[in-house]
Length: 180
Length: 223
Image (cartoon, rainbow over all chains, first blue to last red; front, side):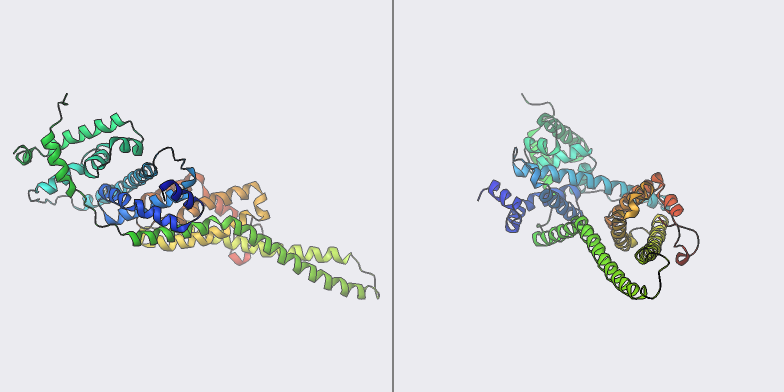
């Protein structure tokens, strides 16, 4: 059965078809949510919200684009909005913690490459980080990224290029890793 | 032509190294499916509530109608016998109807006042609650209970008064937002709800709709 038939059955209220559609896409949705959120509980929340919205709004899916493209548009919207909420919440909590820790100095060990790379990716602007994670980490094409984020393919390419340039500067201490 | 920023060696290395970034575990398919199914079921229950409200209202009217019919029939029979002995001072049907209206009015006002007082106490407590996420689940449950009553009130004759309707609609919105609070991520949402309450002056409006005195005595003037 092809995907358009599956979608038609879901619209007709077939719960087995719902499960089959979920099974076909859940890995990619969860992986992207996890890569962007970096937290299993958040990734599960975002995946849950994505599928609930997708099933609720399946009637508005016209089939002009692939179902996966439509689903990833929902995924990125849910994840990015959710992460903005979490960031605001954590910022407020951090402000409170900082107020309690004034005068306390901390020493951090020199981080290794993995930790530095993580920190460098985390510090990218949201748009750059999203494109970088989708393209270089999860293997989405620029066309898929453009459709999911509602931007031109050229914008996606430009953001990826800027993301890589920033990472290259941030990781310059480790240049020997890729020049040898 | 190669872009000045392009460096195939670096890009290849970066793609490889970045696989460690937020590396996901195996998708918890069954767990997620169970959560999605439960949440959709819960939403489905909320979505059919408008239909249920009409059904409940229709059933209440039907039961009330049957009750009134039976009662007035008994009263009429009794009065018909009595009327053989002496002439009534007023039309018996009209008198009974007035008594029923009066009793129903008092009962309704007591219920309405209790509902308004409970809602006021709840919203005051919500706004002042400093112990945030610990109480979210309890607050959401209480909000759902009050929301059901609010929606029944919106379908009642009281809502034909524009001032009352406006108040009930404000309360419905606030209670719905509290009922849907996520215990894990409610900090910002709570602030938004409180801001909305302040902007719409919902608590002052609510307080002015509640008659002064203890609840049991506030059976006049509510709504």
